[in-house]
Figure 1 (cartoon, rainbow, N blue to C red):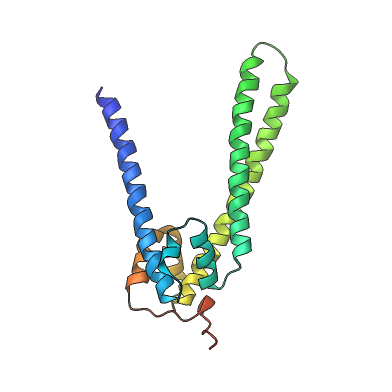
Figure 2 (cartoon, rainbow, N blue to C red):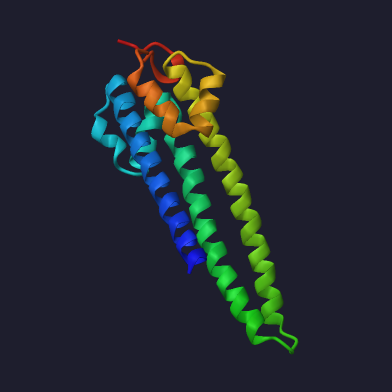
Length: 174
């Protein structure tokens, strides 16, 4: 009984931690968007807020959003293939089955593609954090903070006195 309560408490604390960090990120983005001349409510809508962040940062949103979409698609394909592979292997225990062998090949390929697209997404996100950092006059250290501790650094960037310079640190054309 005690271990079940401990597991439940760990799930609840992980959920609450995730919710708190998401709320802090949204609040920080709201303030950042307002500094950059965008409407703050745009930070609430998933994926659209990343589009606006790309726009504010001077990055092309197509590459960032495409990397995210491809990662999610191949992640879902990997999950479906994993389920199919488990089913095929379970059905072929004690027999020789080419279905199980083929599904393992597809599973390996989908995991490789999922890994490649996740690396692409991580690289694009790092570039986006760097461009956002430069848009407010900060350097690589601040970009690393946005990348690794975004929920804290979005709040700092939103509530400190830094002014928006322009996309990727280039002054806005009037």
